Image (tube, rainbow, N blue to C red; front, side):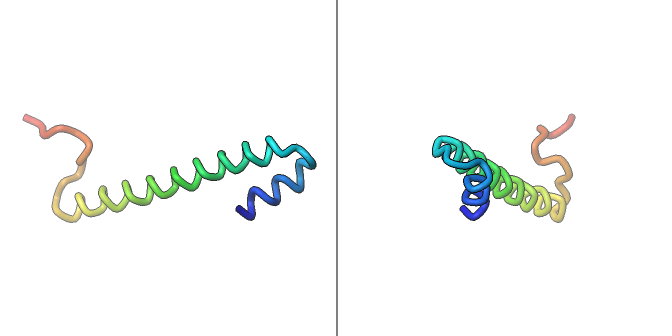
Length: 59
């Protein structure tokens, strides 16, 4: 939320821009969280010997 406030102060009195930036920040935070979770899944899979968990088994 601090990022949104800084953007709002930079952009001046345009409330719709603050809403837009809030949405962008929410999406960015969500994507970061998704990447962290996916990274943990991939790491755990590698530990048990699965190197490509998103691909079907070969052969």
